[in-house]
Length: 428
Image (cartoon, rainbow, N blue to C red; front, side, top):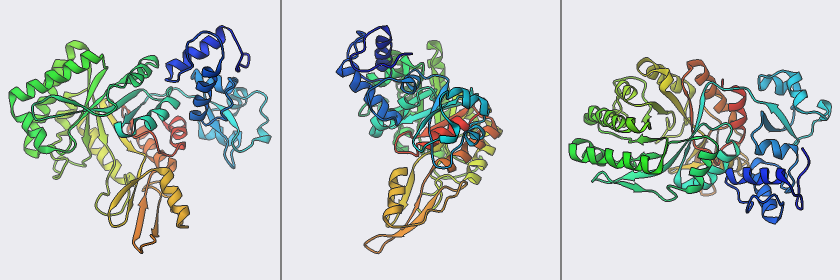
């Protein structure tokens, strides 16, 4: 291919412009003329991919744009082609062939190289919160060739069974991006942990039927691939009604060839009390197409791991005993918490910055997550537990070992960017 820059003209420029439009960037019209709008769109794309934003479409930018057979990897200290071949489970010859003109003995930190992709048996889904939709979708766009399903938090509901649209819901750019990239779009309906709301709708047959019809109408009107139900804190006495609701909803969606997903709270046995008591694993597993286990928030009121591997394993042990593995997705965290006088959510970047600010030593722990402690200026002792790529890799190994359907990420954006390298490298 030739190098394209401002002033270039031709069908290859139009091809790039069309691809930028598909990916949610705006180069203006696809007229085959590389003008200022196209240059700006290319620069934005390059920034999102971690490239130097020069506005020039060379081979690396082109490969990333058209989701070629390569991952664009950024060289870090200590990297060699041999180490990368081992990490990404490809041969040394494959890496060399993917990088003609690159001297393996002269790799530089920050240099971009091509890593051949391996086909995957497992799916990779992304939960997209409406309050972080722009940041989250930037990461999804960056990894469009990895993500198989997007589930944006777009709806709630009220006591009459009507759907309530959240801010940023039904975003046409998200919908078009999913369709252009053949990514399944399964928006999510949440109850915001309101057990009384769920109970009101479930226990009234007329309200339950109205709620189901409203959901089906929305899914068909918007032509979604399906819908995800995230009703948490369901009362224990309503667990059978919740399964009945899911069965009825599935039956109503089936004539339209739409899928039903359910996100359910983690539990290690059928007899646990608490907020997960209303989630009947066998019944839900029978009723829906995909079950997403929320494998996080192990520590809540007191400092500790977000998702210790021993606990994740216990939840999976129970889940696979009562739900087909082909229906299970592991919902995995990317965030952290800072516990002081109260618990506050922190991103990966904030956690790292806070450790440096307080000169705190981070304890790297693949099985419990990295953590550190510090004393704030007001004298309050803090503990920070968060998720990084090393910790996330342990989750991926479990998914491979249990051979379940795939993973769901909560959530792309503000996470350790190397998590996505680990998914490419480790997930089968």
